Image (cartoon, rainbow, N blue to C red; front, side, top):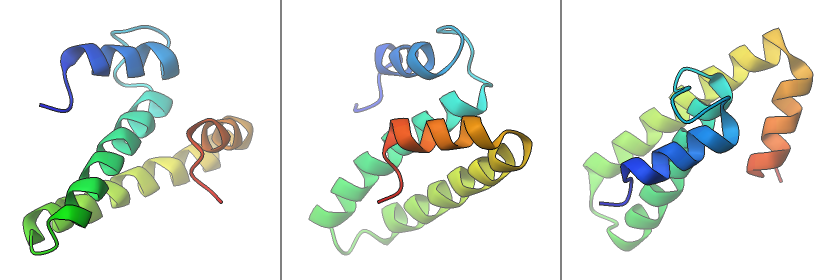
Length: 89
């Protein structure tokens, strides 16, 4: 499995306040980004897997909603997160 509890804890520790801080917007966006990268690689290899493609689109939508919310409440935190995750090119 690609997303082990250790990987999740590492993501939450890096982007949240602690390993158990799963509700932090930064940590959730980072986790979604990790999952999106993995599903993108899977979709490239398996072009006919439409279920994965749908799940990928849903995850991107969830991440977009969280990022829009973060941009509304704290623009500096949004910019820092975008830069740290390297989302915009």
